Length: 184
Image 1: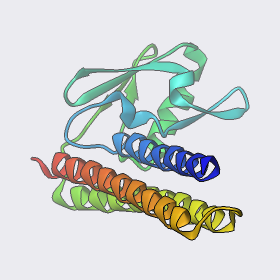
Image 2: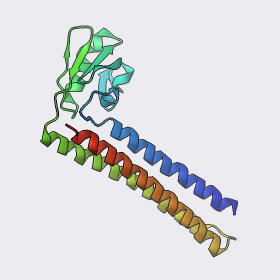
Image 3: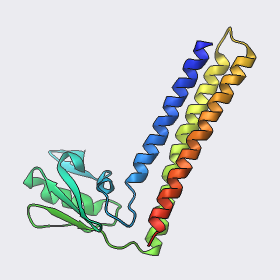
Image 4: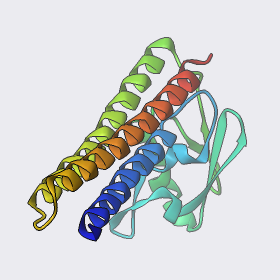
């Protein structure tokens, strides 16, 4: 019996990772207000390699429609500014030599709809991760030997229940993010 319980626990961990990853990804999508997570996906060409922005400077949100980036190495100011500009976030940074200011323009209706599509795409990727965890675990459960079919079915139901809960969580994140984006 413990083999089935171990598989169910493994499945739960895999699904939780998919949900947490989706939650993190959704946090990087821009809504109406400034959040430091917005620049998490930006990668900067620093010292000959692409590194996350938060490893070359500190990001702050001093006002609702403004982000600032304070580079730790002043020589990277231009590279950071260029990385933000070339990201698909639609932002236009400016720098005064020491700090990079990133004003957040108000979202147009068209841009809001684009962002909602991106949210749904990221959510679908998260759901695929959850489904993958379920499918893999159920396949392993079926291969377990010296266990009754009833116990296997019971474990499969547990895994399905975990799957349904994880999918529901992702749906909640999507609803919240969608209303945040569409809020004018």
